[in-house]
Image (cartoon, rainbow, N blue to C red; front, side, top):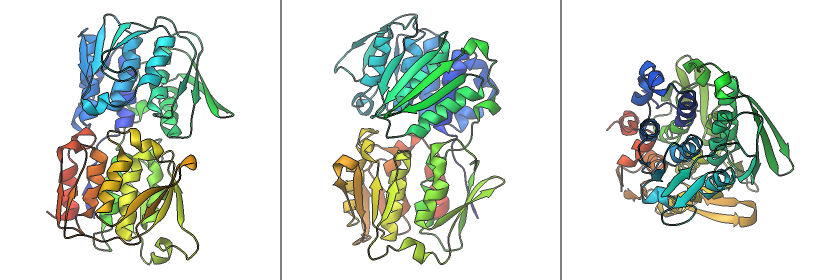
Length: 422
């Protein structure tokens, strides 16, 4: 069995950092938990740095390409502002729209000035939100806008209400945020009303004790674990991987990988030290399409798993109908375009089937492995890690940027080499 070390879940860490900062004991908490930085990633480090600079009343914060930290921090800073603060990033971040969140904060009383294009970084927070105002916010582009507001709601007194619209994607991440708040003693109620989700938050951070690490439930990252599933397809049949630190009862939405992995012919079993993944023997019937039926996989709540799963199905030469992946266009790069570009070199295609229903057809029926392949990562960590699974099939495999994995999984290539035996 090959042991794989995984980073801590950045989704959980990012939420924990905002909660602890809101309680006012971030420095102490980080000193008590030194592995947060060690087992974290660049996104984690950038959020820690931003929160530290904010506490020191610095006037500018650069998030590089860290979308989640930028969004969560923006709401936090706008709710605690002591002086004007500029928030910026690199070209990737500055091309990612944040207007739904900034519009909501403006409605609540914040004053925001855009430096270049309205709705996008860089921008300056000029005036703080002084009193909570109930708001409505679209999460079509990102559920993180809702999570950002949820995490700052307990900074204000009374009952706070948020109405989410365009809720077809990534609600598991909203659920994770709600779970984090409930775990530390904040009452949160959520109901679906027609095509909206109405959330009420009662109580304040002042009314709950400093949260322990146990309550924050920090654990290894299921999203990062996904890239070893397609890689496993190229190893010897009996080879199993131990993905250390994963929790079977995890609140991470991407723990759905336990089930989705079966569609790659991979079984996930609980282990005392994490999760054990092995290829299923005699699984040909599971993986083959019938003559009149194509596998249909909805992935609305698991966008981060899409690149790894798509590459896995292409390795298997398995065509699949996917639903709910449209918002991959709004990630660190346009991930659909990046997938299409690199899949074409395997003679595979990913094309819209019915745009109004967000359906996409992955055609891997003519899949081939070229003698050599240059993966165009577009500086996107998930594109690089997904296509790295081709190494057992394409020995001359190269990447336009290997360092982009620092964003979520700094020691990925070390772990990858355990499976590719480089």
